[in-house]
Figure 1 (cartoon, chains in turn brown, yellow):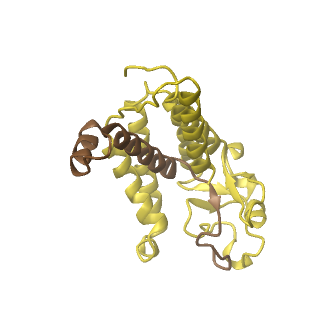
Figure 2 (cartoon, each protein chain N blue to C red; figure 1 turned 120 degrees about the vertical axis):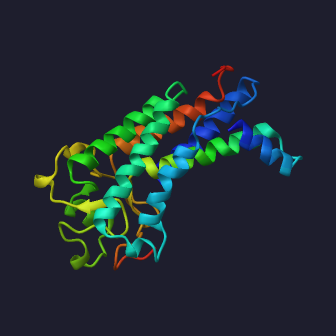
Amino acid sequence: MKQIATQLSLLAPRINARTIQLIVLIVTLSLLALGAGAPAGGGSGVPGVGG
Amino acid sequence: MLLLLALVAGLLAGLTRAWIRKRQYQTRTLKYLWLVTVGVLPQVAAFFIPGIRDLIPITLVKIFLFLSLMALLAFILVNLRQAGMWIIGTGLASNFWVILVNGGLMPISPETVQRIYPQAAQEFILPGMRLGWSKDIIVPEVNTRFIWLTDKFITPKLWDLQYAFSVGDVIIAIGIFWLLWSLGGPAQHT
């Protein structure tokens, strides 16, 4: 993760490497939540249901 | 939605905690991040991308979900020492278990489906059918193993949307909240 943060901070030097590390952590947790959790609903893909 | 709320709430709570205590909000170095990407990709293909998800037969969807959950479980195991990770792992294991013992998808009862989709056409919510493009399969409660671990619970009705969720989802949400909350605490070296 540190390597990713360092690489990204080289591309965008104004952004603190710690901030990027935190963003990487949050994105990782979001993906983990998306994959690990299984709530159903919200109108996604059920015929006859909008949204 | 539930898990997204946990993420936002955990982040806000952690930032507030750090601000009150005049500490810097920390970050954590997680190992083997590629396991999450590799783990989520099959699910994105099977559940989210129109055009691709239509082409994947249900047997392959089950295999994708199994491999995906295995990769995510491996990621959690290698990062188990991080705060909250064992809680997330418990929730994931709960979901994984009930999916496995019920044939490869998360069971949801026809009654629960009718409550979250009262306007859905009846012919699309019959027992044995997959619920739209989700991870859920419609199974009557009498034919469901470990019913209390399935998508049995329903969120309050907000903005005309309702979600069915499992005990595992709640545990994952608590784990995510806990991890982000802990980042506002005293510095730890991991």
